[in-house]
Image 1: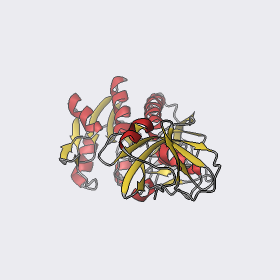
Image 2: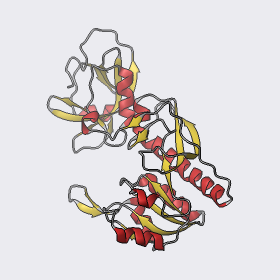
Image 3: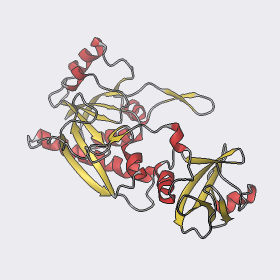
Image 4: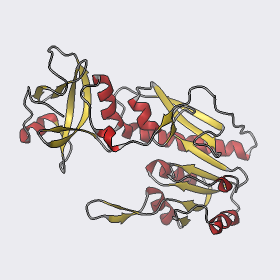
Length: 309
C-alpha cells in the first residue's frame, strides 16, 4: 500500500520499520518536533525520525496540523491510508478522511479498556491479567473508533513496562500489516467498540512516581513494574530520593508503621507497607546507576528501624 505514517517514540518506530520491511510504500512521515534531552539539552531526533531520515522519506515535524497547506500536501500524496501510532498530537477531523481508507491507529490495549495516553502502564498498575493491541479506524473521539482487529496477550508475573511495551510494539506492528492486507483484499470489516467496559488511561502524573507506603504491598509492587524502566518509582530516605526496582511481596511479622525498613541485606531491602512487606531487589541514588541490593548497600546505609518517606 501507499501510506503516510504519523508517530514519534520507539513503539511507533517498530510499526514503521515493519511496514517498510514488508514492502509498503511510506511516502510521508509525520513526527513531533525535535526535543532537547540529557544534561546538555542537545536536540535529539525521535526514533521515527531516525528511520525516516535514514530511508530518505519526506518528513513533517510541524505542531500546527490545522494548516491548510499541510492538508493540501497530505492530499497530494494520494496515499491509500494514514497509519498513526503513538504520535502524541491530536489529528484534526479533516485529516481523518484524507485517504481512501482513512486513519488507522495502533493502540496498545484491548479497547474499550484503557483508552488514552498510558494504556500499558495503567494495565500494569491495575493488575490486569491480560492486555493486547487493537487496530482501530480513527474518528473524532478519544480512541472511540471501530476496531478492525484485536490481538490478546497475557501479562506475565513480574512483567515490567519495558518488557510489555516491547512485546506489544511487535504485536501491534504485525497486526497492523494483517489489517492492511485485509483492506487491500476487501475483507476488513471494523466493528464498533462495546459500550460497556470503558476505562481511561490518563497520562502519568509526576506525583505517581512517589511511593505511598501506606498502600497495600501488591499495589506498590505493581507500581514499581509499571514505572520500570522509566520514570522509576521513588521514595525519600533521610532527604535523599531513591529509586526502587523489582519488588517482591513478603509476609509481615511485626507491627511496624508503613515505610519502616524491616531488614536490609544482600537479598534486598524489606519495607513495611499497609498489609505486608515489600522486598526491593534493586535501588538507585539520584545521579547514580541502578544496582542490586548487595552492591548498593556497600555504599549506602539503610538501617532497620529507619523510615522511608
